Structure formats: structure tokens, C-alpha cells
Image 1 (cartoon, rainbow, N blue to C red):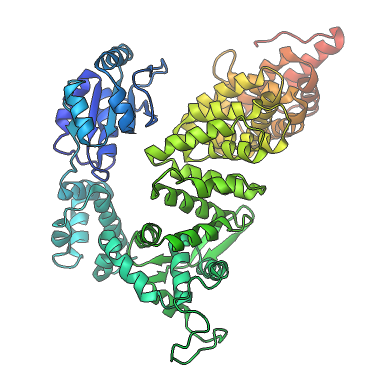
Image 2 (cartoon, helix red, strand yellow; image 1 turned 90 degrees about the vertical axis):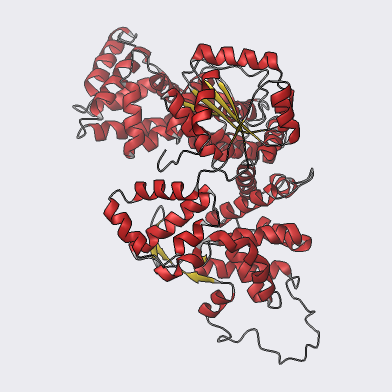
Length: 618
């Protein structure tokens, strides 16, 4: 909603929303998704919105009773669109009407789809054309610079005629946002006004072939260019290390002429320590080092000087060109990315993301083959990279169906590597965009094979923690954890271990601590209390859960916001005084007069006198 400029078709689509189903057609980059989300919010007056996967069968899909008011299918596959009949559409509208909800379907503008929508479904689709560039610019600037006088002074500082010339190119909404971000950089003094045009991505695709040709006779520059494309915004030392590693992997494949060829030019010693300065090497690929930044790791801080191309999206344009036009170079890219050391987690994560992007640019039935090779590896680091790649690839609606199909098959196989990859993929964009699918896959992964694999249970636990970290998904994750924790077996062990880890985080981090406190104070039988009890009763998770809850109690002694939650926890656990709960209560009692200690003492006194727990408000 921030800085949203209504396109011309918005009012018509808002009227059609009264029919409960709106079909949007238009080209990628037209702002159709942003407009669709604003349309749903405007029509329903609610932010209870949910994404529906692009391979959904709308003829069989049912509207859930979850209070969701708006649904968005971003890129419904052509086969699914053509399979929808008029009777099924009418049934869908009735379901949405009963729920007071609206569905927006974004689909491609093909002759077959248009003919089906109009001839079979009797629907007049809304053509999503982009709003005028000037309108988007004004809306975004009004959001960034709320003072009109400030806006005028910022625009006056730009080169004469820059905005008019730029907007005459009819940039799409995303490109206008890029222009605004550069104007902000000028206003902050980060970018010189005269340099603003050189940073914009308008000519990135046109410049890519020229840039590649300019360095093709220098293997060092070629490697440096490709390393910068992949590891842009990393520290310059990382980019240089990866360029050297690429040269080693290439083993001469980046040399335009054989090493022993007589070129008629003087041969330079490649080991000469003053061969070229870093500034010269960066200039050769039209990149530079940004200002020094201080970044924080888990145990320390460190300084970086990030490398970036002068022009936005230049690295993406070069990689796109290499992948589409130079097959052998593309194979070298994959080989190099696949061998990224897993010890460098940030680099391996970026390498996985780029592999997923390469898959998006591929065609044919083997687009995911390079990622699958990693999944079949025996190294856990490769499984993580494959999961990251699958997550990135799933942003493409067509590839998302292929990814989902593989994960469903892999979740049931005997191979530990494939099951771990399936679980870890659920922790990426794939799972965050499809929480119900992810939770079902995770349950299958951990229960389909009764082999007690620690690696599989660990991967599933990590995925559950990642899903829980997204606040909007927590109710669904908690509901799944409660179901998992009731019957004995691998699902219970995994759920309890995940809960214990969540309690450990909540003991020291404010936001999750407040969430758990609110959970425990809500209603007579909060699901959070059942999860805590299960984690205490499960032997494999008891120690972690106990230590976390004792830290809760210790901090509650001086924290008035946490104290009621600990008191409430002691109250709801008191009727279940056995096993891990009994052991925790003995520790709670010893912490007198800390919160929860008195209630624990009363329960233990009753238990010592009669051997049965004292009844409370469970």
C-alpha cells in the first residue's frame, strides 16, 4: 500500500470484485501483483489475505473456514486455467460469497486463455496495464518525502531534464521504484547527482554483451566479472577469493587462447605482485567498492567493503546472457557454484540462490538437474545448498510445480540425503509461501520411514523453527506441533525438540518471549501449555526445555511482564505432576520466592502427602 499508484483499470476491477472472482491478465513487470494485493485489501477492508499456489485445481479447491478474506493466485498455470469450467466457477463463487471472501487470479495473456475465459467461462478479464510512470513516481516520493517543500528541493538538485528524459522511456513500476531509491541516495549525499543516470538498470541488458566482450581475452577479468555477478555486495576479499577459485575450477576454460599459443605479445609474469591494482580490476568490469560497513556475526563484529556494479542489475544481466548464450560457460558456472565450500555458509547460500535463478532461466525437462545433483550428494552442506536453490527456483510458477512434485516423492524415500533436502527446502521461500504444503511434507518426511534418522529429524526441526519465525504462520505451526506431539514416535520427538528450542530462544529474546507469554495467558487451555508439557515429558527434549523454563523463571523475578506467564504456566502444569513436570517443579520450588515457586511448592506438598497432584485450573 505504501506509495501505491492506482492504475486506470483499478476501479473496474474493484467493481468486478463484487462477483467474488476477478481474472487479471497482463505482462510481468506491469505491477499486477501489487495492484492485486491492494485490490483485495480495498475490497475486503482486511489484511487477512492468503496466497494460493499457481498449480491449484480451482475446480476442486475449497475455501477454508479460517477467516481469510482475500485469496491471490499469482500466475495460474495455463493448463489449470483451461481446466476450469463454468459450473466449477459458479460453485467457487458461492463458496467465496458464504465466506465473505474474494479471489483474484493472475494468469498469462495467451490466445487460448483469452478464448477460454470469454467463450467458456463468460468472463471479461481485466487487462493489467502499468500505471503512468509519473503517477508511480509521485506516489512513491510522497511516501518517502512527506514534506512537499522537501520533495521540491530534492528534485531541484537532480540534473536538468533527467526526470523527463527517464520517464519518457516508460519505465515499469519496479524501475520507477529504483529511480526513487536513487533519488533518496542523492538526497542523503550517498550518490552524486550527476552520477544518478549511470546507476539505473535501464541499459543493463544492452551493456552485458559489451562488458563480456571487453574482458573475454583476460581470464583474470572474466573470473572477476563472474565472481562479482554472483557475490555482489560481499566484501572485496570474498569476491577475489571466489574469482581465484573459479580460475582453478575452470582449468584453462576461461583462456581465449591455449596457454602455449604464440600471441606475439610480451608474456607477463602472472605472479608479479604489482600486476594491477584492485581499483583497476574493478574498473575493468565497471564495478567499485562501497563505503566501509560494520556487520555483526553471532560472536563478533567485522568490517566489509562491499563490491557492487555501477549499474543496478548488471550482474543479473551478465549471468542471464552467459546462461542463455554460452552453454559451455554455463556448465562451468554450475560446476563452480556446486563446489562452493559449505563452511562459508553465506557464500553457499548465495551460490544456491544463483543455481535456483539459473533454473528459472532454463527450459526443458532437466532445468532442475544441477540442483538434484546436490541433493543426491553425501555432504549435508550440499543438501542445504540444494534446498536454497529449490526455494529460489520455486518463485517461478511452472518450476514450483516440479519442485513440489520432487519433494513429495523424496519425503518418502529411504535416502537420507533426499529426505533432508526435502525438509530443508520447506525452510526456504518454498515453505514460507506454502505453509500447509510445507507442514504436510515435513510430517511425511519424519514419519514415512521408521529408521530413527537423526539427520532427518534435525532437518525437519530446523524447518519447523524457520516457519515459526514468521509471526503470521505461528498459529498454523503451533496447531501442527500439537498434533505431532500427541502420538509417540518420530513426529513427537521432533516436535518436542523444536518446542524446547523455541523455549530456549524465548528465554532470552524479547519478541518470542512476549509471544509465548501471550499464549500462556490466553484462555483456559492454551496450546502453548500443552506443547511445553509435552517437551518436558519427552526424554530427548527435557533437558533443553527445563533449562529454558528455569531461565524464564529467573528473568521473571525482575520482569513484571514475564512473571504472570510463569505463574500461569505453573498453574496449568500443576495437575500433571509426573515425569519431566515433576522434576521441573522441584527446581521451581527451590527458586522461592521467584514467580511460579509458590504454586510449585503447593503442588509438590500435595503430591508428597497423597501421591496425587493437586487439581488446578488446567
